[in-house]
Image (cartoon, rainbow, N blue to C red; front, side, top):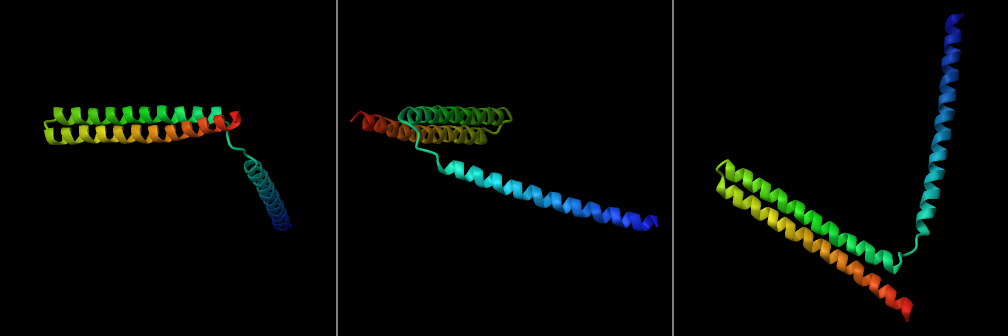
Length: 126
């Protein structure tokens, strides 16, 4: 008798668990659809926001460049201390090149966004 009760209770728990899983997946799909619909209604940012984003990109590029330069300099100094002068020069060079790349990319992206924002501002004036 007790074995039959165990089988019934196990079966009942599986049915309840299956219903709960089916219910939660339906809820997740509906929230995903709602999120997708909200994202489709996004407008283009205004002129001030575009200029601000551009300035942020320039600053981010400069910060990444400074980080690359510091990393290369530190590695070069470590190589020089451990008597690896060729590796030291290579590391310092890599840091400088990385810094130039990061600053250049940030400046280019930022300038493009700033120009786009200025264009939007002039469009609203005329």
